[in-house]
Length: 104
Image (tube, rainbow, N blue to C red; front, side, top):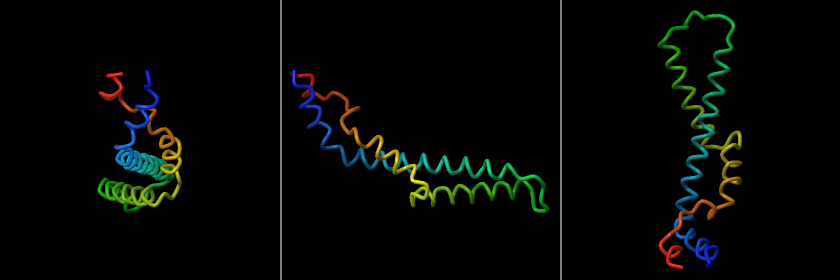
């Protein structure tokens, strides 16, 4: 049985697609983390302002989401880069067994 040899070659054709998907997921994770962090900072306000209303809160949440997405796409905190290094180092680790693997 030469599972190790065939698994390494089977993961090669889709590795660019897997890397792109991993990069997108890592950036989305960083954006979600930033949104949560911004939301926690906003909820820590000690007093109500004159312009506080549900419409203002909704607009502020949308602006925070756009800011978080922008920061994540630039790699501001480096969370996506860290996830890419951690999970991108093992391209064949979670590759499903293909027909070539089952034949041997």
